Amino acid sequence: MTVRLERDGDVAVLVLDNPPVNLFDAAVLDALEARVDELADLTAPGRPDRPRAVLVRAEGRVVSAGVDVSLFAAIAEGPDAEAAGGALWARLLRTVQTLEDLPVPTVFAAHALTLTAAFELALACDLLVAAEGASFGLVELVVGLTPSMGGPQRLAERAGAARAKELVFTGERYSAASLHSWGVVNRVLPDEGFADAALALARQVAAGPTVAHAATKTLVATASRQGVRAADDAVPAVSGALFGTEDLHGAVASFLAEGPGKATHRGR
Image (tube, rainbow, N blue to C red; front, side, top):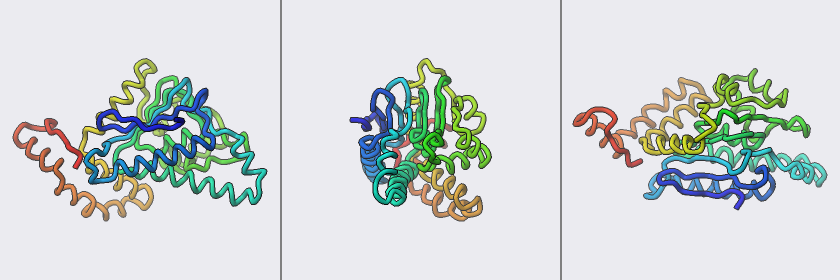
């Protein structure tokens, strides 16, 4: 299966596996859409077996060399190319937004070269961690396109408009260290042991207060899209609801009895 879901305790693992270089072709895009929709169902509040974090990773020597260009050729050479192109981007943006809106933390692990669609997918995740040897690029200019799975706007959200334009206009590859300095990559980790370290981070966030993490995602997204005051306005309802969770009740009792950091969260 080119895109599959695995489970590691409370962590759901979304794996891209389309050798040799994990190109995003039509079959991969179909599978990605299906697996992300499955994640939305699995992580829905109230499910007793819900994963409490998602890790996105890839098999092979690269994360992805990008999109299979024959996909674009088929659209460009077909009838009503503009409408077909727009329909493609609308569909892929829905998948990106579904991943972005999951009510649990998401971690993207980039162990090596991460181009175009894979990079845009990474930018939809809450945390982006990269191996020291990883590199990134939005190189759509080589086929006369602009990145259209949400990459430019999410780059601008993380690094600012000028940086987003530079990365897209040049089509260059950027190191993990460079993008960390821009605020795009959260953490740069050693190449050796990278997979285990990325999984450990996903396990760490999965062990936290899941409903509170969902509230954090809501408030940050509201601030980014509508401004800080809009996020302030959302706080009473979003954060007030946390006082009804088992996690808060248990953590407060644990804090008072044993001190901070001893609580075990159940994710509800």
